[in-house]
Image (cartoon, rainbow, N blue to C red; front, side, top):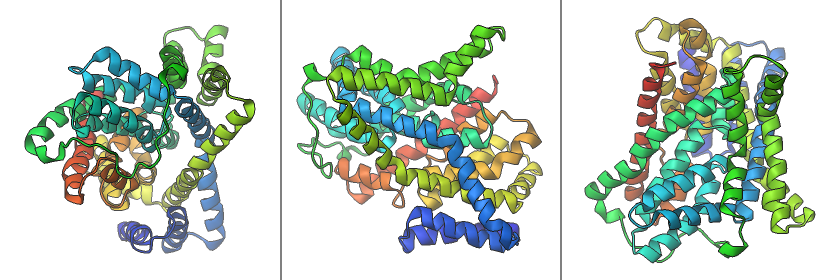
Amino acid sequence: MKLVIVAAAVVLLIFLIVKVKLNTFISLIVTSFLTALALQIPLTKIPEIITSGMGDQLGDLAIVFGLGSMIGKLVSDSGGGYRIAHTLIDKFGKKRIQIAVIIASFIVGLALFFEVGLVVLLPIIFVIADELGLPLLVLAIPMAATLNVMHGFIPPHPAPTAIAGILHADLGQVILFGLIVAIPTVIVSGPIFNHFLHKWYPKVYRIQKSIPGLGEIKEFKLEETPSFTKSVLTAMMPVILIGISTILKYSLPNNGFNKAVQFIGNADVAMLISLILAIFTMGLGQKMSMKHIGSTLESAIKQIAVMLFIIGGGGAFKQVLVEGGISDYISSLFANTNMSPILAAWLITAILRVSLGSSTVAALTAAGLVVPMIAQTGVSPVLMVLAVGAGSIFADHVNDAGFWMIKEYFGLTLKETFLSWTTLTSVISLTGLVSVYALSLFI
């Protein structure tokens, strides 16, 4: 009976979002209330459970997510992303142009969310493709694949950060092991997939003279943008601080120095230090006034406000499932099978992703369902975070905004978008799953 309730809740959520076109946050809250009633949770407890679910979720995430968006906005508006991409492309040349695009997308993707990174990098690679006489998709595929991998696996992006909190995984380890998983995933889904798609479906590789749907493109003069070193350090500083503290945590004695390093490497502290650095390097260093910087930071918060509410709604839905005993029930079902918890986590998330469209909502919902599997099986929480992250990327299609962004920006038909982008996200997801399995042999 409980599985029927979960299935009905997911169908209701899909119906409200896809058919009724109701706001995703409201859909999540409505579904949470009705699911709680169906699970016979006492009426007086339902508001408290939903409130605590939202609060717990946003309490773990709001600072990292908010400060991360501010850093990304400063890097973007100052021309730092433009400098990174142009410098790498200039150094690598035409023969290794895809490698340059991947590295640029990797660095920019640490600071910017998928959609923002796409908007920042697409005009740059369009100019490069035009100059080199290349079809836009030759460079767009590895760029979009890399940004999507970063968005699914690496904090401070919302989904992996939130999942790490739900599954009580060390954020530093998620970053380090996430980078290890990301590298082979990017190689397979970027250049290798690009090579086979070009042979299998060459008609999508067209020379383009404009970027449909992008609107006004902000132009930068290269000499007026921050230096390459400054831009890279600013974009990567959160990962550098958290990564160093994680490494030293297990390699140094627990003395005063190590405690100071751990304090600096705490996700909230690392993000705050990185933001202060970005204000100087990408703001004041570029002769922005504090008023302009303040306006930029404010616009960054406005851009993520909707996403924060959706994440909070996902936390509320997750808490209802936990309090209603769904998590324990589903975990017990998988405990009685021979299915690997990593595969189970990926499968549950992939099904939700295809159904709901939003990778973040799918990841948050799935994470709440697989929590008990960790205690029952002893699997590493970090591996489960990465497995859920891989599942959340699977088969992007018409119920996700990213699908339509790719269609419009790359000038593709609906059929071409399915055969290229939906296939690509499936390859990313499956390669990520295989990479997580390979990593599980060592940790």
